Length: 465
Image 1 (spheres, one colour):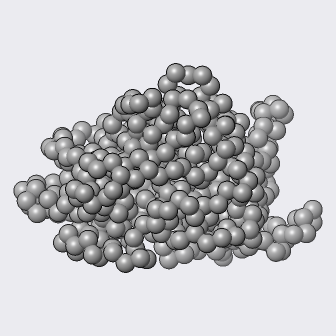
Image 2 (cartoon, rainbow, N blue to C red):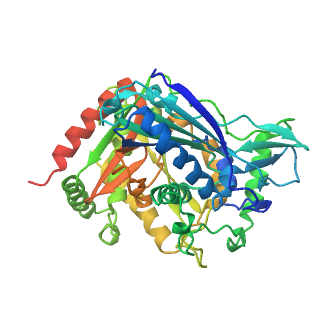
Image 3 (spheres, rainbow, N blue to C red):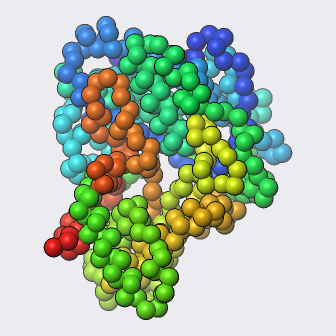
């Protein structure tokens, strides 16, 4: 595992008296993320500065600009208040003086290796991710810090900003908004006015979220049923690194030609499917074809013989369901208006299931693509909240080994997070550029080797002549 040396520890708050004490209720969009482990994000930049230059010029401005940014994004310095028993509701509470932990470190690790797309141990990046402070108990409730940040310098080579935060506080769009705002204030030399306009400031009024179907009550009941009568109910907010075993990470790139080839051949296969006459009207988006391709490759990489027609598996094994989950932003997909800068979670979970035998078969890819494309189309045509009442129970049904989830989105444009150090070299989520897509993946080493072979050979077979 890579070693880092801790140089400084800061407690960073919004400027004194700049934010009043504020309690933010959790909406039905937030509550399901009690089941979600903390989000971890890494931002790598080329940074050919010496430790002395970093300490004298860069670090003071990073700390100051973060404080100024937290004036607007104060929930990240606040705490999740989790009552130990109903009927009290969990909420986010900010009081003057609340803070987040900022760690400054350095490392002699190979920066070029860290930003490469090559396979490396998943544990390699763990030292770059800060740990959230543990919760504390107060007045019959647990208080969970919501964010921690670590800045790691690779002297004369690069810099990494690692962030860990609780998903219950904000979704990927809100987090990207925070990071871009921090970067803008830093780049301006510490001028908070650069994010003062209405279209740049986060919108915190949770009252804009309407709940006619009482999803909040459904999710809260699901939550309390899950934790039962435990004297210390805790969401899946482990502050320890995720168990990764022998997992490795790698980044895979779909070029525009790959996407075009996939779309063309999948469309042709679906048109030849006489069992379904609706295929002609389905829009095959880049998201749908890329996700389906990765999903099928993952399922096949975990197959015993890594074959599309595996006869060694029992019939019951082959009929087991495999699950795919992606999240859809609902800010512009509901019957009422939600500001684009709304801060919090505004996501709908989309659960798909398919028989393992289907995904392993010759028609696995076009059928998976069609299933994802149909759900995307339903979301676009007013079905964003369809079936959402089963969200929390859905994660309990699917075993983690049978579940593939999509985290992050190219639409967040995290590669536009500009601190003035040059373009972001690497972000461990996703990127969309020039019609292509970058996908990060973590698998066991054996499955990763199979996945690489399936991915590369699969793309070659779908390339247009």
